[in-house]
Length: 232
Image 1 (cartoon, one colour):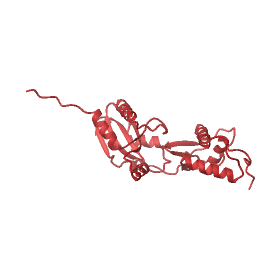
Image 2: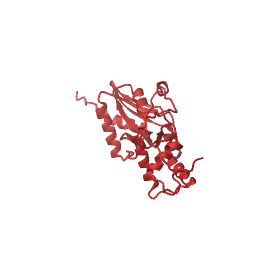
Image 3: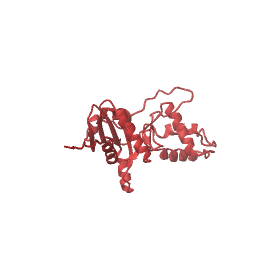
Image 4: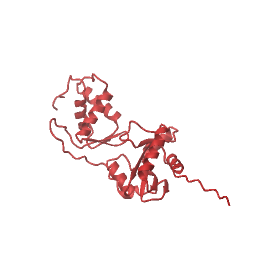
């Protein structure tokens, strides 16, 4: 075995980049798993502790790898690493990510928990059952949910968004059919943000700590039409 090239050197974002690709080829992992494994490997091989906060250094490494196309962030809290074994310096990396789970459309065709409205377009809510199970275990009634819009079939849209390398198949919790998808989505986002439900640490701006039932109740308020009084 060749000697560890970073022996006696403090852990840096650049070293973290190389160790991430080496330790987690074609894997889906959390940032904390990355931090623990990278630090353990570096120290065991004779490396020195980082001079700065390892969380910040790991964030920077993941950002750099994302720019190189070596890492994606398919869902809240998860990072998908490419199948490359070595990240070569000063070379454009064209390695394609190997997929670990293939999500077929038929697996997302399960009936949504709630449907609402009429129209050719839709606003959707999906989540991962793992998040719901964890929330229920801790006695919470809300968990991370993605709320977006589409002018095409919502199942196809979700597949295109989340990709195929996933820890599990997403659950469609709500479909709102409408002729005004942009307005409905913005309204839902605004109400949930005002309620303090927005998850700022999530990728994108569409993840909220909520539930299909809560958003369904909000939708009923948005579409509420008071009945006209009959004065006859």
